[in-house]
Amino acid sequence: MYVAKCPTCGSTRIWRDGLRKTGSGNVQRYLCRNCYHRFSDTNHKNLYTPSSKSSTRQICVSPERKAKNLVEVETQTKKRAQRGATALIFEYAWRTKKRGLADSTIKQRVYRLKLLVKRGANLTDSDSVSTVLALNDWTEANKRVFIVSYKDFCKTFNITWEPPKTRVQRKLPFIPTETKIDQLIAACGKKTATFMQVLKDTGARGCEASSLHWIDIDEKRSTIRINNPVKGSLPRIIKVTPKTIAMINAMPKTSDFIFNPNTATIRKGFMKQRKKVAETLQNPRLKQIHFHTLRHWKATMEYHRTKDILHVKQLLGHKKLENTEIYTHLINFESDEWHVTHAKNLNEESKLIEAGFEFIRYSEKDGVAIYRKRK
Image (cartoon, rainbow, N blue to C red; front, side, top):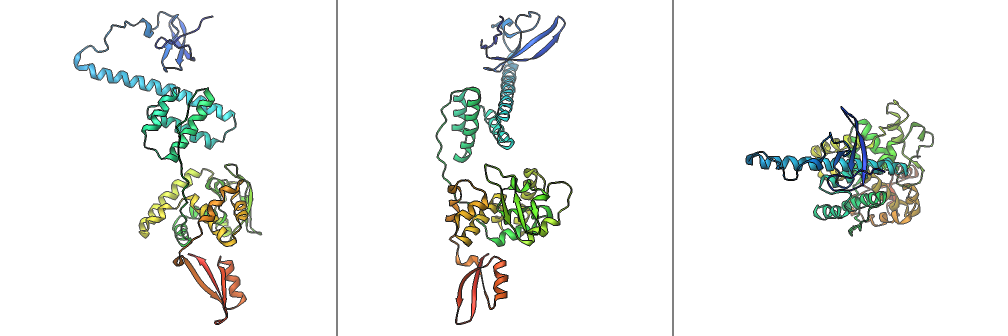
């Protein structure tokens, strides 16, 4: 049985790469998985192969063009390696798709693998990948994502690799005041403002909110059903304010989805509007507010209001309690971050509670109940 070998490195780890039409018939083309060299079947002498070229032949025809020709050869070799890496990454994406991984996960890992190749890594050589990871000034958290992506790539193609160690310290998220959030929502366009209001009221992830259908909204009960959770979260039904329901009802009903299902498109428009608002108000801290910031804010406020970590866990859809416990460390607010008011009767107290104020104490001297709410 005939076994084709790479004329450059002699490897038999090759792929069929289509047919080339010639005057004497079709010729099988191959792609070497070791050095990414493309070549024709060496049994056909009428076609050029690297083995038929004299090893003593010079690349350049004149000394003044020597450097230029060498650069061209190096560029062609690099492009050939990148084409071979692209084929490997495509094969990896298809195998992970058959394994049932989420499209967002596949897309993110493919992006990381392509970036490694762009930085000079050879995906079939684990040592070169370790070198690229060591030389590039990536954060430890970002480097861990690269390691996870390439580790799964090695598992798919049975490549031996000892991943480098990373030390990622978990940071506390930025929690803005409600005033800043409301300022940003009010300054955004109608669709973006409604999307952010939903995130603020539900604590949902951006991709969970973008997947909402009109049938997930219950106007009578003022609830929103998160029925397409991500990252292994649990589905849930969340009570929202009448303001959120009213903003949703004002949205145009052009499809089954309330918002654009592509979260990246919504995020792109939001970032442009956020930058404009931050410059207008001369408040650079607004640029620290992302879609996920509203999830952190909602969880922090709910724990501060209820002191019930299990309630917050259910609100966020977490399966593990340790993922929720971080919000117990984010409730030490400064005294100037509160709205303080009072109520003289039951009607005023009801309105304050509906507005999110919490009871502090009753002043017997003045005959009023004191309430407060974070700004």
